Length: 433
Image 1 (cartoon, helix red, strand yellow):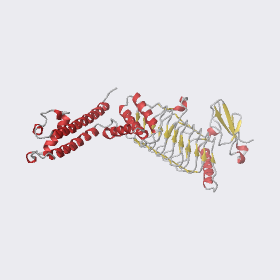
Image 2 (cartoon, rainbow, N blue to C red):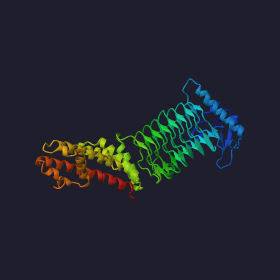
Image 3 (cartoon, helix red, strand yellow):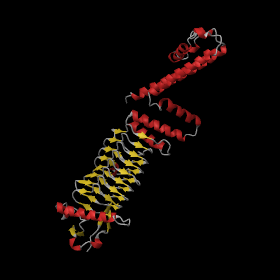
Image 4 (cartoon, rainbow, N blue to C red):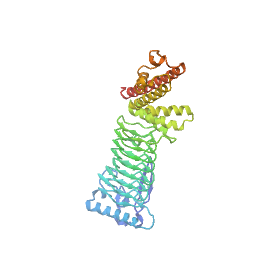
């Protein structure tokens, strides 16, 4: 009688997948668990009553022999000229599973169970596609600095404490859809060269929720990343992340302590960008996170400008960006104000020098025009006061005087606008509630 195979539960039903080792597995070495004959690869560590099975009672030497067999299978396929898959689906890995620094061909861990306190794939290199669909990790899982050169599939994988810091997904998409995260998740300084999916169905808390702390600090996403419908229950960190495409957080519930400090959002041109930033803006608004709300508002406006067809609206949006970065900058309007003072002083100097009846030798043009330019900011529209420039009123023609007043009025208007933008940015930054 061959091994009974893998029993895969699917809700109220289950499916039996035949054992891939049955063709050359000696029947006299099968283990009986709950009335079924199983090979030592698929035998569980406990029976249905929670009692240790024969495999669960293995000592270290038996565990080492088990992993030596796995390593032999792995090495055999690595050296094979054919692109065969290392089929480890349904395998129950006992004790400390140490694969640190090892290379893998295309490998299938479907429904595999890692039962020890620590599973170590640190610095492992996966040359082909990797499938961890429905795999279960009982405790700490370490993929730090691992390299996935092809597709990395973690669909519906069950994690406790998952470490992926420094991991590089450089081949195909990284699929963490419906993956369950029961503890801390660490993706700090990892790299996703293709798309990354962390989506959930949105109607199952066991799947939707990140129950522990979530870390993505310094992570680089070169393509899309999708967290749709996820619920973040603990502090979440996207500090210093680089998003080359606008990230998707539609339907998400972000924790109050969610950080996007110094994150770099480089996408304002894709079709999805407007909606992506609008979602984050509204979430930050609900949390009264003013700075982040304003930041995502600015990104939303930049994205809208690239799709806006009306030229006037597009121009006004651009003007708002260059003068105050959509209300984010206190200093930028003041810089423009200083530049405008200098520019208008030069314009006034040109006007005065063009009037032949003025005695230029007796007038310090630089001091005069600089003072006059400053007065338009301090006393807006003061040029219409006849006492503003008594030395010129008698000598300037009506046409020159009108030109001077109109230009000064324009400067006063621009100065007020720039001061208002700076004041609004200051108020927003220090606004409470």
